[in-house]
Length: 225
Image 1 (tube, rainbow, N blue to C red):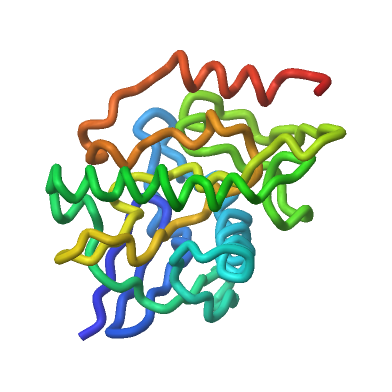
Image 2: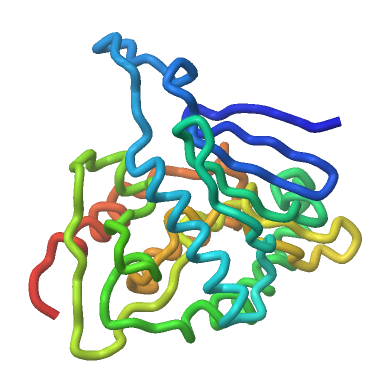
C-alpha cells in the first residue's frame, strides 16, 4: 500500500519502488498565527528544480549513492519530483551511536572528499538559471527574497549538500554503510563552512549555532573575492 504524508512545505508519496516529493496545494499550506495569511514556502518550485538537477549531476560525476532521478513534472499546477525509493533506513531511525560513528567515518573519508572535488568559480546551483538558494538555517534567520551570487577568479567554491542531517542519510541497518543521501533541495557551490556536520546528532538535538550562521550570512553579503 502506498504511503502518503505532508510536512509544512511538501507532500510525499512512497511506494514499493518510487518516491515522489510534491509542492503543496494552496489549501494545504499552513496559516500564519500572526497575519492569518497562507505561508508560502520560499523558492518552492526552484528547490525541486535544484534537487532534480543535483541528483543527475551527483550521479554522473561522483560515486556518492543517491536515489535515481526519474522525472520532474507538473500536474494540476504543482511541481513533482519522482525518484527511485532509497534503500535501507535513515540514520535517525536507527538511533545508534555505533552507526553514527561509522557514518561519520564514511562522511569524512568518502562523501565530503567526493563533494569537495566538485569546484566552481560561482556560488549556487549546478543549474545557473536558478536563483541562489541558501540552506534553511540561513533563510530561517534572514527572510530576504533574493541573494546575490558570488564569483571568484579561481574555483574556490566546493559542492555542498547543505542539509546532511541524520534524516537525510540512509544506511544499511546491518553494516551501517551509507546506501543513499536524499533531499538535495539546498545543494550548491559554497565554501566548506556551509557543510555543517548535522549527521552527528538527531534533528531534535541540534542546537542553534547563531554565530556560525551569522558568519555564513556575512560571507554571502561580502563583496569582492
